[in-house]
Image (cartoon, rainbow, N blue to C red; front, side, top):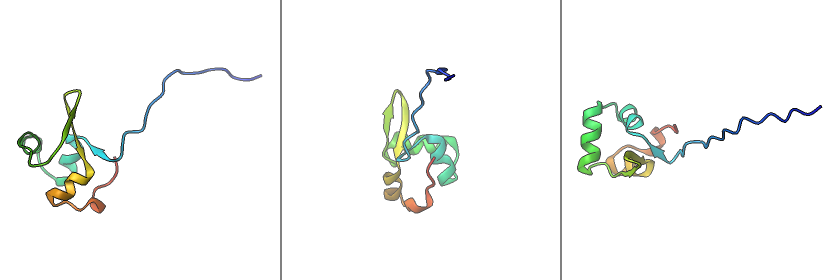
Length: 73
């Protein structure tokens, strides 16, 4: 007998090419206020998706953080 149970929930793996502000804080070892100040000022380029900042990993390299040191989420 087959089990036809289906949860209906599908999740998509978060894109490894984008960081959240929390990830940014962890990677740069900075506080929340500084992270948002850098994002709002444009010093660290980002995009906003649904009001939430997303930072491309490649943009961190431009900020001076080699991407080989940035771990995927």
